[in-house]
Image (cartoon, rainbow, N blue to C red):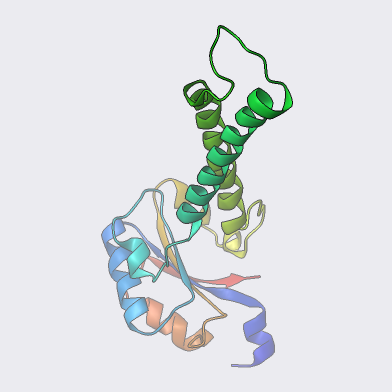
Length: 181
């Protein structure tokens, strides 16, 4: 296949009508040596992420670390304002009263964790992404309602348009489509 012909294709996509067929096809595709692939489903399918070789993200650790930093920042804010910057003796309690710092510390911990989680998810997913080449496939709009899709991307080292198309057709899909850029 010519390089210019392959560069106009994003990949090849197979359409399935049930989750079991998609999962079996994903496992067979990964076992055949394809690594740049993605699956689209209207519902979560147990084992699909492992079947396509999806690696876990480090986002949970990042959220945890930012939560710790948020707790330190919240406690430090309370300490600075109550002990260092503007100490006021209220009701005879000591300036450094750790128990009264708990609500602010908790809230800042949640704030840092939630913001890291939200922005980290957006960055990790490459969002906002209003257009993707798979939207060009005729029935892809049904991926959010009742159809299941498996796409092998042209960036895969093993990708050859004719061989990949033949391979996907051997998995007994309803339809195989070329995904144009």
